[in-house]
Image 1 (cartoon, one colour):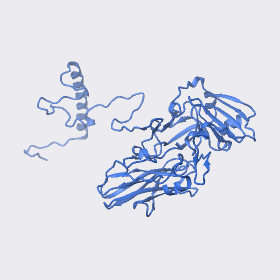
Image 2 (image 1 turned 90 degrees about the vertical axis):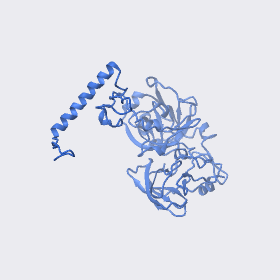
Image 3 (image 1 turned 180 degrees about the horizontal axis):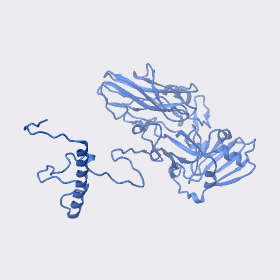
Image 4 (image 1 turned 90 degrees about the horizontal axis):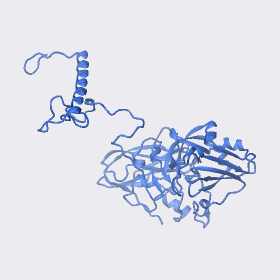
Length: 430
């Protein structure tokens, strides 16, 4: 074979190629050392500087972004996100919400799990931690953190959601993370509460227990004993590590599928009784009026709900194929189906569910749709395995009244304008 000038070109063997690459690497390292010594021709990255005319000098990489031309950063004791990824929670006065549109899969990173506090985050020393279980039991006992960790543990993936998790005054500029910010899914590790119930010998007459935290609010909730015997956890782990302080370190109660405030953080005391304790958090708060003039109390279960995370404000889309994506969840079990409407709620079609589909956990859904460029709105509607169908805003208000402050779960959507801009599909809330 000959080149353009007629000079024969010698084929490059694999051995010559590898030898040349090794030599180039050694030369690069040697050059980096020399540059460090006199500070004349190396930048902070160890790469040669450009010449005076802005052109790269001999031996310099042809593209500064070519990672094959330099040694990467060394290993470290603690991993970090790529500098190109910078998700942040949505901050409010007493809470911070999960940025759903920036996440993948069903597990929420621990540092992006939503927070809701009533008196700040206490600094609990695990060496001095204890959990008292007393009241209507045969053997009142105090458990240290080491005591709890000695019991056989379980790990389960569950969502957690604040009872007040809906923007009744949303605007078109509302983002997906602001529609349902106070819900997240994690893998929770701990001891089934039923195990500790057996240790203390809960009396048959006990029908309720008080879970009390050791934060400044001393938050307490009355919980039916049946939940303790069922799937309640005394959790000390989240996503493979110890609970984070804002999630209840070192120990919290976790009630799968129930409103978040019942999963009392920084748990210090459980008292068994034959009646609810009527704490502040279940009388003046966490109750809601319903249409017949009565007030719902102890409405623990979080009903089925869905959220389209893309497209959403402030995205801009183009005519053609668009994948509608989102999450759905239900406190009653598995998500059975998610319906999608691409004509502002007039007709519906089932979306594809992404495995795994777990009970009381986020389920990802997707729906492929060809947009013709005309203005419309896209909606999602969850159906769980009990047959419960997520209501429209009108159906919700008819059942609960617009004055209700908790357990909002109406369907929500996004308006797609003719220019491709996406905004929140606002709804009347009165």
